[in-house]
Length: 358
Image (cartoon, rainbow, N blue to C red; front, side):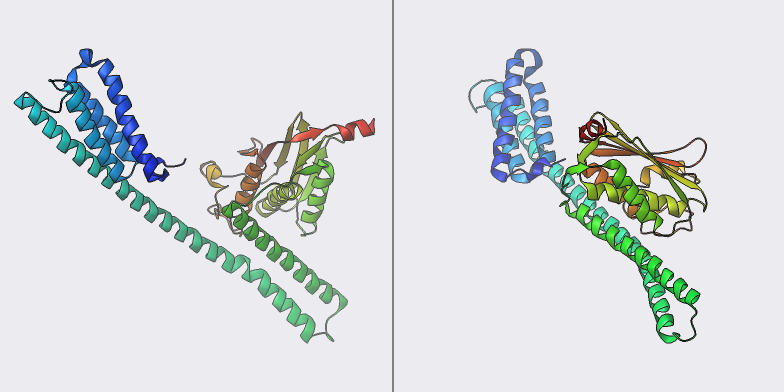
């Protein structure tokens, strides 16, 4: 939420003065019932609230203005700055001092909270930076080392390598290159999300073709799981960003391949409901710890007590791109075991495909 303290200084003066005047008008209407001493409390509360959101100078002006208004309109004799009673004069003096001190203290507290918040943000950024470095030191260095070692073997032992050896080394280079490319893509996508420059480029997409293309890409990384697809052949065309949706599905399928046992099944289904696209990806893995489900979409977050690697960016990118497409994502554990991701994206749909098939 935008802080009111970001309002231009000139506007702060105006808003602070108008707020005090409006409260004073309301108090003046009911002054016969509440008395001028209660009005002082109401005005003090108003100055305190102004001090929470505005800079110090507009707050001090509001404090002085409230004291003058209280004296002129509410303390007998009315409509004059003269105070006839000594007790009322002392009350006015105390009001002025309390209003000024209250304004200054409220501002100081707000500044202290701002400094503490900035310090906490710096510490959080430092933790994320250290986490990212630790992740990248493994996730980027490992495939690079694999590529270098396999390349050295191909170059140094050309005469002694059998065709099978060469095939295995090339396969290792291919897998390491795909892994390296995946991590670089995730870093670039996260940079786009962090910079706020992500703008969906919408076009009509055939969901079935898109899903099968992504599944093929995932299978080319030599995963050990079996992927099943369930999409009604007459599903509507949807107008959305094809690249973002491909990245969402790709990251979810790769995540499932990392955390589910070899030979298990990962299923993906797609359905259209009017102007709503729903994608469901389920697996047969161990699921997610209940206490960690709320954190799995956080940047650089990795599940505790797991041996699997990763930079912790995949699912945060999934959430970021889903929200960029005006969609929502929900994660839940299945009762029979495994995880279930449900994505719903509001998008313009077309029945052109259905009409063509008819």
